[in-house]
Image (cartoon, rainbow, N blue to C red):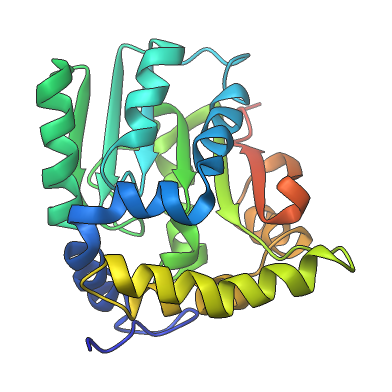
Length: 245
């Protein structure tokens, strides 16, 4: 069994995460649908809804994976360009196959890069999306800061991430599912069983809710918003890059 990635913000996490997602790329989309009972697609639509009031010409989809969210955003928001970014070459390879089948080149471009060292100039994008990716950043604050740098003043960052259900009934039920059912199904369908033990561990270690809003505030975002989804299993966050005076 592959060595599981380290949890939390630790040195060397990036390389482990890259290898893990390279390994699970062939069945990543199928596993997402099965393990979330299809609810992940609804969550992605909700993330895109937060961008509808914005003026978006160029959009970044950070941690794009196989480009599901990038394709959905292009279809629903019609920006001039979407740039999907991920550290995993294999995830991007599968994403590129989707783009080729749909004839979405060059409206969607895929780039291999780390969130903390983005190969884009300042103020390159009107907005950025991250779905189920920020908890995998080696340095959360560094990733938030570099995305902030690449978003123009007045632009927004929308983050969709797993979170801790807080209800008296849902919290223990979700904990049981994530500790027992999720790793078992993931291990059956994926070549990297450790990846689906990493998922509940990484969710447990992630500073969600008000703690994540604090991180966004520390890294320069304003006009902050947090919206729990589906009993708090996932959460939406929005922050804005302040406009210049």
